[in-house]
Image (cartoon, rainbow, N blue to C red; front, side):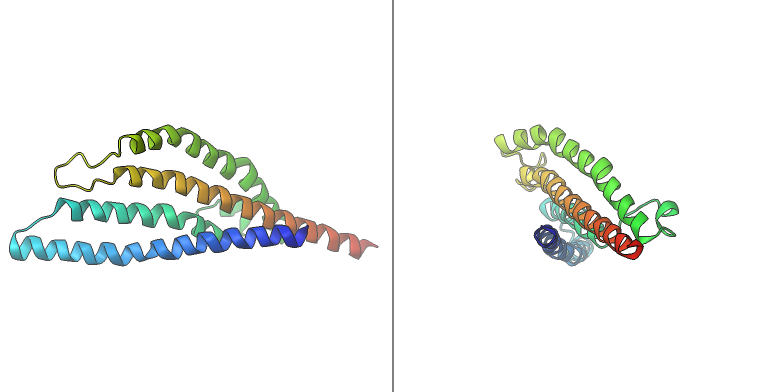
Length: 178
C-alpha cells in the first residue's frame, strides 16, 4: 500500500513538474515578445494588440501552471515561524494538516466557483473585447480550472508524502521503544 501511494505521489509530482517546466518557457516568450513590441513601436511606430494580449496569456500560464511545481519544491509562502525550527515529524504534521484543512478545500472552492464562469466563456467561445485582440479568452479562463486541478493533485501528493513520513516516524519510534 505504501509503495502504491508513493507511486501516486511521484506521478503527480512528475505531471506538475512537466507543466511547470513547460510554462516556465513563458518567461522567454514574454521577454522576446515585449522586446519585439518595443522595437516595433519605437523604431517603426507599429503596435499590435494581439501581441500585447499574448504577453498577458503567457503571464497567466507562467503564474498558474508553475504554482503546483513551486508547492512541490517548497518555494511557496508559508508561516515559517512554526516550520523552520520544527522536527521532521512536526513538519510532516503541518504539511498534512495544511494540505487537508486548507489547500484542498480552498482549491475545491476555486474550482467550484470558477466552473460556471469558464463554462459560460466556452459556450460563447469568448474572445477579446478589443478589435484585433486574441479570440481565445475562453482558453485563458480555463487556465483557472487547470490551476485548481494541479493544486488539488499536488495537495494530495503533499498529504500522501506527509502521511507516509508520519507513519515511518511512528514505526521507527515504536522500534526504538521495543
